[in-house]
Image (cartoon, rainbow, N blue to C red; front, top):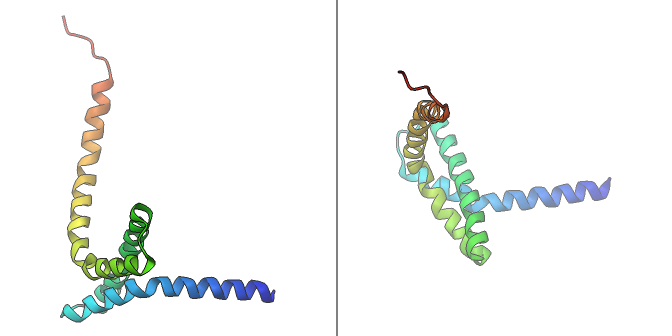
Length: 117
C-alpha cells in the first residue's frame, strides 16, 4: 500500500508540474483582460491549459524539441488560446450546422433514380 501511495503521489506531482507552464500562460493572459466574470476567467485558464497540452505534445512528437522549449511554446499558446477559442468555436459550429444538409445531399446522390419516360 505504501508503494501505491508513493507511486500515486509521484504521478500526481508530475501531472501538476506539467500543467504549470500552461496555467501560468493562462494566468498572465488574465492580467491583460479586463471586465471578465469569474466563469470566463476559469474558462480561459482551462482553455489555455487544454490547448497548450495538446500543442506541446504535438510539437514534441513532430519536432522532438527540448522539454524546456516545448514548455515555452505551451506557455505562449496558453496565453493566446482563449482569444482564438471563440473564432474556432464559431467556425466549428458553422460547419456542424451545415453537415446534416451536406451529408443528406451526398447520401441521396448515391441512390439510383429512375428516369421518367
